[in-house]
Length: 75
Figure 1 (cartoon, one colour):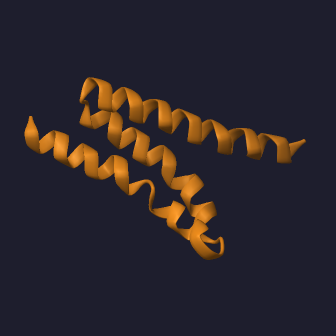
Figure 2 (cartoon, rainbow, N blue to C red):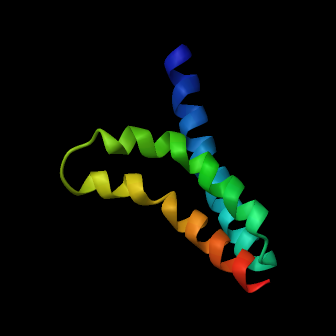
């Protein structure tokens, strides 16, 4: 049963980070975007060990961090 919890937590982190990304862009909140990037770090470590182009998914947490930087600079 422990394996099911790992998958549930994995997908929960991905869905929660996408929801926070959308909410952060909607409200232009750099703090919410930072939280979105932090939630995506753990799933991206899984894709960092993959082969071929799946390794590029490990760079996806950089997007919320860069957006948070630009929003903070503009405000």
